[in-house]
Image 1 (cartoon, one colour):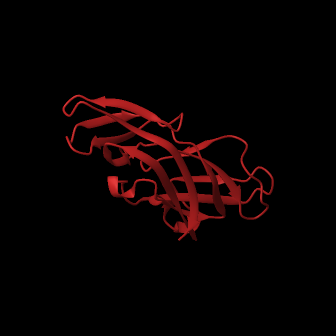
Image 2 (tube, helix red, strand yellow):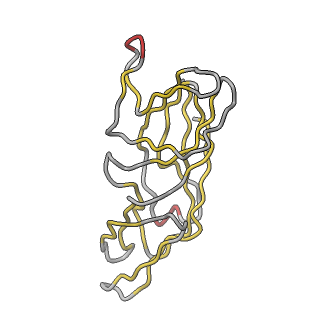
Length: 158
């Protein structure tokens, strides 16, 4: 079992508590087989709500798949970590950790399902899409623009 942390970094403008929302949040990943090195050509998603039992009664995982090239059965699970606050502006922070058996995440594609709050007002922004790696809105309570810019990520071994 290997653990990989997905770290986010972004420039935050007047927002805090950036996070994925709900157990059905979809983590879109490209995965590499640890046995043969094959990298999936399609984006695959995993969620906390999906659970598949592992062979031999070794618990369960969010996704179990067979490698197309070597036919090895691999699995991946999810552990949520923390949110990104205003203090994390432009610093990498682990948002989620993946428990991998025979797989390694190599790329992440942020999509819909993120949320944040206004840093000063607490105004909720419940439906943030980071598909374009940038998001902007307006906080009417404090008459300020808000945004998440230059979203980048990296994977680290935990």
